[in-house]
Length: 139
Image (cartoon, rainbow, N blue to C red):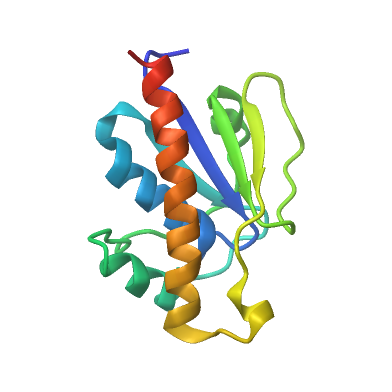
């Protein structure tokens, strides 16, 4: 285990929520946290509205691609965070597993960029809390 805590964010497609969480964690923690994202059933591309909503707060996802979970990476992370109820990761020894049941504005009839901004803000507040916890364990 290195001195740098590691976090893996997982959603189903790795095109939206987990990419958002990873980008927001990189912004919040910089190089003090090793950050990865993956999907249980990765899609082909990052969700354009997710990327647009993140650009509004200075997080650039260009160059990111959805990817599957790497078992070796999974086992060496400190935290594995699943976003939403659909993504399921078989627990392994080592990491602490958490599920973030994120806001789903579409259930309230909110779609498009407005939906993504609400999802982004919900994830951002959770990321800030986790980053603060990690700073507490990291000096």
